[in-house]
Image 1 (tube, one colour):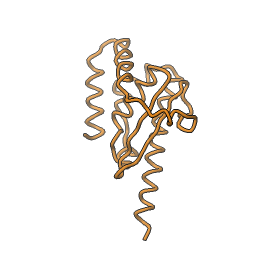
Image 2 (cartoon, one colour):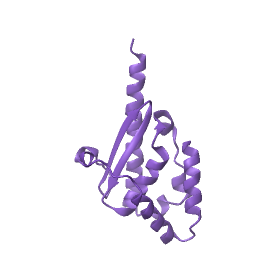
Image 3 (cartoon, one colour):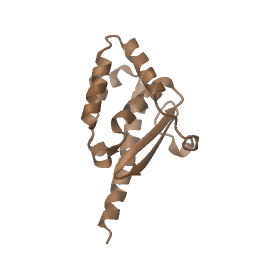
Length: 146
């Protein structure tokens, strides 16, 4: 499924709720569905800087696609990272780098987060894109070598 298709699903799901309290509850429930991260990745080297909460993110690369696992010590933050992973997990590095992630604004997420959580959201997106850039560059270098 494409990034855009997954984003549309999320927009439709959040569109079912008129009240932001219901949307927060749905976000928290979404975080509960996030698969457990291997404890070996819950170290400082996998922490995302810029987040008020502690958020661990691990990515591995396979066949030019990135796969993510993550965790957070805060339920709303865990919900946010689970949405990002839902959209970007298993996508190509190039698609991740080009992703606009418009669903964030469409569901009103950024505007309903505290400033520190909104900064954390930006930091999560930045870290995911940095992983994509690193693996994309590494893959291109490998292809360019004789």
